[in-house]
Amino acid sequence: MTRAGFVALIGEPNAGKSTLLNRMVGAKVSIVTHKVQTTRARIRGVAMEGDSQIVFVDTPGLFQPRRRLDRAMVAAAWGGAADADVVVLLIEAHRGVTEGVERILEGLADIGKGRKVALAINKIDRVQSEVLLALTKDMNDRYAFADTFMISAEKGHGVQALREWLAGEVPEGPWLYPEDQIADLPMRMIAAEMTREKLTLRLHQELPYQMTVETESWEERKDGSARVEQIIYVVRDGHKGIVLGHKGETIKAVSKAAREELTEFLGRKVHLFLQVKVRPNWLEEAERYSEMGLDFKDGA
Ligand SMILES: Nc1nc2c(ncn2[C@@H]2O[C@H](COP(=O)(O)OP(=O)(O)OP(=O)(O)O)[C@@H](O)[C@H]2O)c(=O)[nH]1
Ligand SMILES: [Mg+2]
Image (cartoon, rainbow, N blue to C red; front, side, top):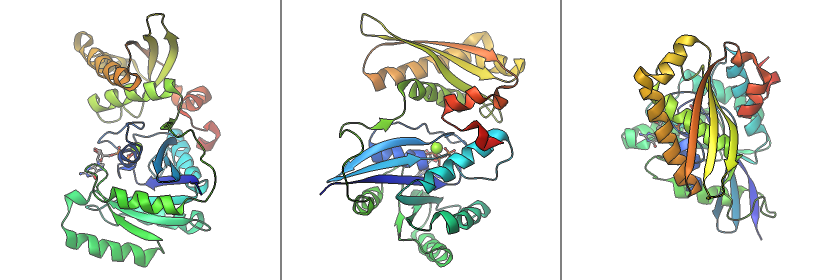
């Protein structure tokens, strides 16, 4: 008998949700940075464990939303949890029960009804084991988790136990995706995300938040290569200058890094062309949200 179901990964920004998704899937399908609010929409990655197909749903971090984009992201995250068969709450071992975690527990009182919620204490490589026992007790006193796992999404510790447990928890039924499919996200979006990751890693403070990347065209060429054009939208002239960098150095480095990653992902040659456009109002444009996989109305 086969099993298949959706497992939503939720938690505060930076908890390690995307890192865990990538490890479970065995490929990088969701971008990862050391900054908060990296993931903007729901990203599905597919993992097989025995006869079970586990469809992991990476979600944007849960935080107190202020702006339209924040609200749309947080709505997408809770929506992911509400649609899932099982929810995994990730918290950071070294940060413990933060105010943000407390607020998520309040939200779980509702979303957790009718589905199991597991706790994954992540980044255990950063703490002593005594801390973990106290944190496990504290969290389980606050919420009736189905089980608790201590993991390091980055190093891989404890991840297999979580995976095996989830394989037994997803409902019986036919697989939802072909066995060899690892992601459910259009290639043009994966490519845009790769560029956004490289930019985010190189830019500072608010700029990553105020920028978005879209794949404008994708052309398959006769020689087997792909020609990809992307637009980087920023809100101010000054930001354009920063993205370009001195003598275009920043954009050149970003383009090279993104092209290399995309080439490796596709296993064939890629020609990547990046263009920066100033669009002061993009954060209020419905089309930008649908390109990101978000619902514009959720941000209202
Ligand atoms: N030390 C340590 N760092 C980790 C671990 N897992 C993830 N990280 C790091 O934590 C940072 C955030 O990881 P992400 O996977 O992007 O976190 P996220 O929860 O998806 O963040 P958002 O998309 O912003 O909500 C990155 O710098 C990761 O390398 C871990 O097990 N140990
Ligand atoms: Mg993420």
